[in-house]
Image (tube, rainbow, N blue to C red; front, side, top):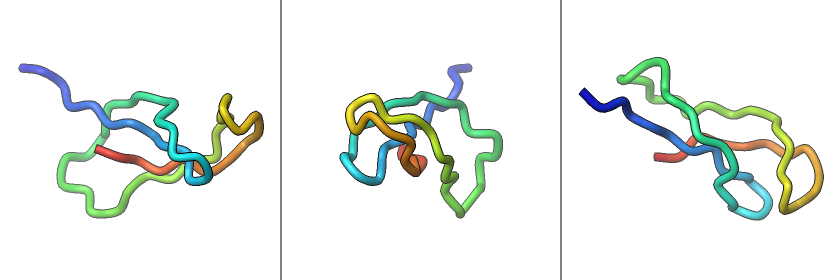
Length: 50
């Protein structure tokens, strides 16, 4: 069975910089992390996308 993948997108520029596997399947709240965006060249909030 294939694993589900989700991308983390930068809130400022919209680029999808990071890939991750979601831990819960029925989660209604999307994950938000502060990570480095190489396109903005600074640390920004990244939100989980599908």
